[in-house]
Amino acid sequence: MRYPEGQLIRVGDLVWWNEGVCVGYVESLMLDPDEYESWGLDEQSIAFTNLHPFEANQNKHPQNIGSWIGGATVVDSIANLEDEGIGLLSEHEKSEFEWATQEAFSRVRDEVRDLPYCVCACVDTETDVENWHFHFVDREAKIHDSVVFPFRQGSRTSNV
Image (cartoon, rainbow, N blue to C red; front, top):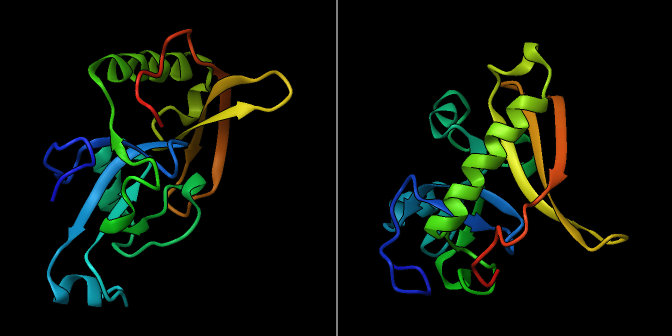
C-alpha cells in the first residue's frame, strides 16, 4: 500500500491527515478481511491518530474511536487517501514540527508537560494565519492545557 505520491505506507509514519488539519501517525494498517472486519468495516483501511508521542497510543484502547482533539483513532478507507489530504510530512515539515513541539512545551504549564498531546493546524479565518494547536490530554482524552501559536513562514511545503 502506498501514499498518492508513491511512498510505501508504514505504521508509525508521521503524516498530515484529516484534509491536512492533523499531524499524527499511521496507527495501523487493516489489509486483511479479519483486520478491517473486526472494526465493522468492509474494505481495506488505515487508522490514524494525532496523539503524540507515538508510544502514548499503547496506553489507549486499540479501538478508541472519537474526537481527534483527544487523540482518538480515526479510520479511513485506503481509497480516500488523496481526497482526505493524507500524506507524509516532508523533511522540512518534520523540522518545523519539531520546532513547533519545542515551542509548545515552552508555553505550556509545567504540570502538564508529561502528558501526551494532540496536534492540529488550523487557519484563523479572521487573520488568514495558520496556527499550531497543541492539546495536552490525559488517558481519558480530557484536555488539561492547550497552546496555540502561528506557523513560521514557509512551514508547510506539501499541497494539503
